[in-house]
Length: 193
Image (cartoon, rainbow, N blue to C red; front, side, top):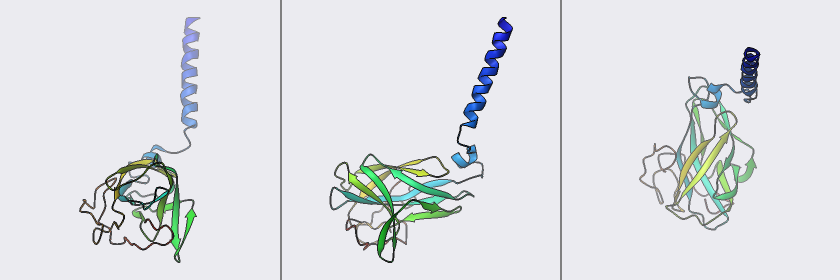
């Protein structure tokens, strides 16, 4: 009798393992982790939030690099610093909310002043230069990326030159400013970025 119980328990354990594997969402480890050359390989660089002019809204800017061989998509961003984060695009001087941003294989997603950007809505506190804000970026394929983003001067452009530019290492992962020639200012509609 003991042998049958042991066999039954082993079969039950195997069935449980198979069921847990089947319920894993159908994603391969390579697609989720972005390793072994089979999927997105994501990193966040040049992230910053200009000090907002009010306590309601803040703009967020960063670059997501994808050195992998598979496209991915940024689908949402969360932070304890705001009630919500919206993805915004700017076309013909008009801003609108979008559901996602593509992150091409071997390419980058650039969120910059005057273009695509993040909007932190209903800030939970005052953000001042020198603070750090934790953002969690959620992707369609890859695991979320958490990045600590510095709050920079309100005039910071992220391009490493001009008023508000900082001297941070432009290649610093997960934060820091500078290093991008495409940074622009003068975005209409939000005033604080």
